[in-house]
Length: 222
Image 1 (cartoon, helix red, strand yellow):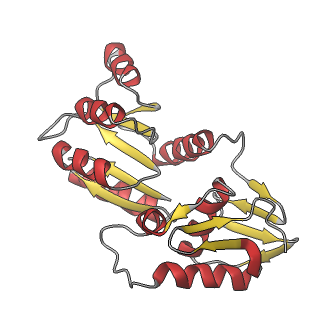
Image 2: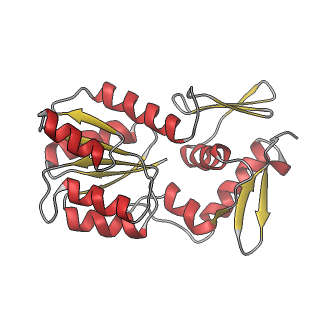
Image 3: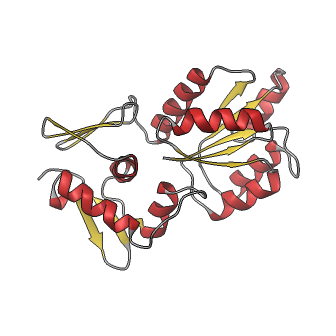
């Protein structure tokens, strides 16, 4: 899962980068509001962590621009502004959650998990799909009752596909969700991950639609 953190406090940004990457998230970071609008317009993220007091363009304006384009990417506002009017403004502009600084990183992780779960329309974190049980918290996968070891990116690809079984994801969309700006990506990297998932789970799990992209079987059974 790929997150975008927009925060101009560099020490906080670095601390959050370390904490969230250890959870297996792909995390890209920006400290300027104008850069954030450009990134959100042209790239794909599963969730946005947004500070309000940003240079270039304030956080509320970034949020307003995102929603004006019709994008429903979940957004958690992170700010030191604790007035009720500020919280109401953030929520009215389209934020999904609001966390006051200083906050506990454990609470932030829990809110991220909850928001990702809600955005996928589920009441609990674990996803049961056919012969698969997938737990994003522990990144554990069980196939036909047998635990399967996946790499971080193999798990990320499986999770994205399994959240919308039957939906066809383009190659570019999946690659954007699996790799951040700091990653070196080989041209056939996505195909390699797909091959490994088919080998570790079962061959018919992921369908290839040539010239279009990939989809996970809705039933997800061998």
